[in-house]
Image (cartoon, rainbow, N blue to C red; front, side, top):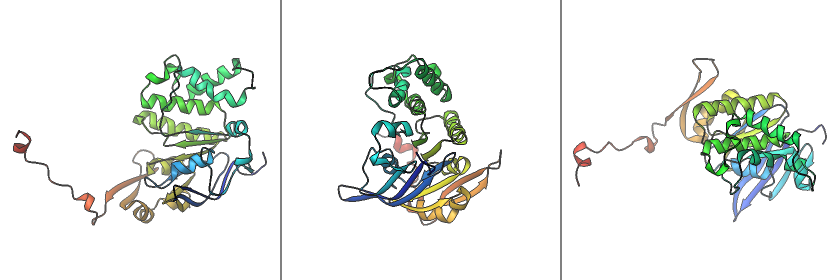
Length: 281
């Protein structure tokens, strides 16, 4: 790999069944940075992450990992370089948790060799990082959605990636686990990994990310420092809601509060039924 950024997306587009889902996207993620990918449902966030991970093939443009066209890289080399944690924590694998995490070591093993003591320790460390060590002996299929999410993050960390792609990494997690995962993402970036994460919560993006990329209808509509990008005007334009950016009462970091627009009919909810109607049969 060269001195080029770990991840560079150059005018990438993608269509499925005649529908344009990603439209000429440019973005760069530097080593040691955490970039949040935000936008409404259907904006193209998950699709873009799948394109970068080569789970889908772009219909236009180029994706470069460390300066190399990702499509020209061997699958094993790509897997050593970039890891994807998907939004849906589902798998048909009937394995215990430690063995699921060990699968992250597969790109680093020889064709005929199995995991050794070093691989085993890397897997255990990844479980400790994600606070999932106590799950190591359990069957993956028996876990809750939040537990699976932490285990699949551990599997990605076991790949020792240069680029970590995360699709809604706080999905299924309770509040404490969400905060730990976001803190871990920040630590991984500070340790030199290039982290690109699709996030729904704009306050999380504003608080933890170095850079925010806003997608809408498959296009980048804004990118830059969170406080420069996540303004009330842009949030109103992209999300169709009123927003106020205020300091967090504990640490002063940006906190974004939302309310419906005055002319939004969704804000006019019907009145509750009278109690007498609930008892009628």
